[in-house]
Image (cartoon, rainbow, N blue to C red):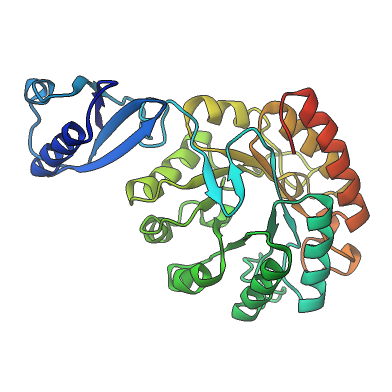
Length: 338
């Protein structure tokens, strides 16, 4: 991909002229603006481009290629960090955003109890699965639409936006009716038909790293969404499979600063799926904050020993209260807030 870098004082008319020329050549323009810098990416196949033709256009400073395979997600395309606003919550700013809630929406009473408790403790976003991908077809696989309706009621009561997973392109429209953030789980990170579909949205997408995926593969999956026209992608490091047996997955904590160096997209950490163990969630959460994560996704439950999914890695409500209090102190020590 090639990008057109505009001069600092380029006018709206000059920017529009460049976009028009890009479209005339058969490319798709992608506009990035921030801190006075305007960059226009040329995506897709088009006619041969004459750089001198573009350099002669008013307001154009330079033409530059983006060498990395992930183009729109790269720092070359956008130098400033992307900030994604969901209701009153900004993901990618100075505040570490806490997404918390049950792995699965099991009942109205269970979900509302958890939502009200974590909201009082300081959580920003409610997570909960209405559609659950499970290793066994005989395991609890979620309440479907009824679960989405319960999440919507929890949002109405607490004011917290909700994030929930979509499993197939068939369910995208239904989930979009209820969710504020659409989650693409680890097993679907390379479901390219689904990525193409959610690329048509403007709703924020939480993209989890695949079970055995590299950092570059995660960024290339994000590129599918960005290339489709949806700029609101949040990356999630949730651990990868390794030979280690003492944790559910192996959290690649170094992936957080690497992703933030390579990409402008916000990055969160999921310590629950990374460890699979309740007693490890708090220390790994602290590590995520210390290393610069923009947020955390923590599973909580009012009775985790009786949870229908992932109870072993879910914090009790008192444990979540303690975690939030502890993270506030840590965040302040590294120049962040909760």
